[in-house]
Length: 83
Image 1: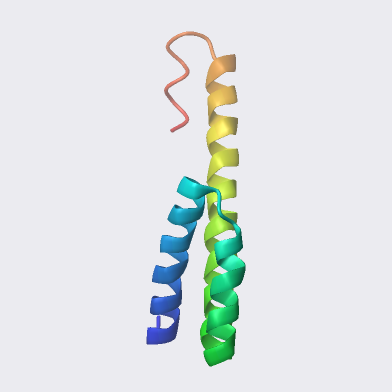
Image 2 (image 1 turned 90 degrees about the vertical axis):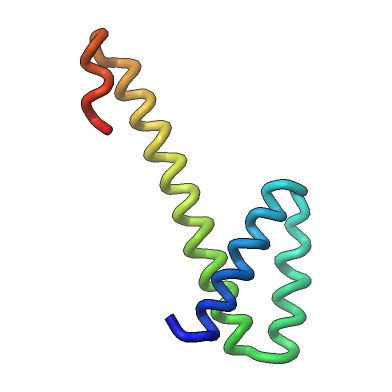
């Protein structure tokens, strides 16, 4: 990635950690405003990284739930195979 994407992705990672810990979703909008006022490119890179990372987290959670349900349906001793 280029410097813009690297910085935006690092910021997105930090913001997601903060939101997960605090529940403060408003920080995303506040950061978008700051970035957009200075650099539309940085704003777009940040938003893209946020969407990609959040989608990935949701997809991984869905997969984990499916694996858990699959293992629960397996006979004893067979549940450890699909990892």
